[in-house]
Image (cartoon, rainbow, N blue to C red):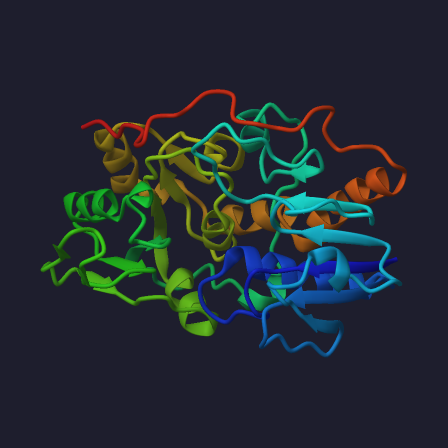
Length: 326
């Protein structure tokens, strides 16, 4: 097949950008299977395995699609009718009742169900990007991995939990001084901030981490940070919202909406096996598995079957912030 993959940012990304990494890895894996890939992105994309077309926001999408394309893999709802078969990969949450495209695919069972759909594909990792998990070396800290400026990611709660368990915390995705959240300054020397880092620097912080703190206050659609951390041997401690109950088994982490219960489990962190955490991802969340599932949805639309019977839309409005009790 000739497959066009669209992205809102140039590819590949080197730091923050989970959605973009999934699109890049998907393109790589499809190429290895004999398909021909075209990336449609803003200026700056470079690829040695795919054709690259620079997206022009002033030109309708339909006019930017080469004639030889068989199917489009979009990452947002098209603004106008598209004559070619396509799917829309959605990785985010809505806060309104606007309809999604009928060919939308979500990223977890819970994510799909909240929009009255059953169509989803779990994100997977290209394991080679993370190097060899070092499962027997000393682990020195906990970590938080998310865009800390988003209040729903709850870096404040992660900092509190780390301090109450007498652990150092590495914050990946935030800064010590943040004025985007009003004014937030974190004075504690046990909390280290690394900003938006990626590559080997990020991997090494995860390899030496005792666990991921993920106390989100919203329904997490998926959480690529979860499977990245598990693969490098870190159990996950988070809230039971969104996809987390699907992704986190009792063997690889613990979920609760009570800080006291999360703290108690972290204090007994030796109960979790770094090796089992890593094996769990290698068995269940690889890019091969993700590609396999998307190919099934490609086949549906190529056969003129809509992915959803009706356009998905939000079933009920969630609260702005879900609770995390004492």
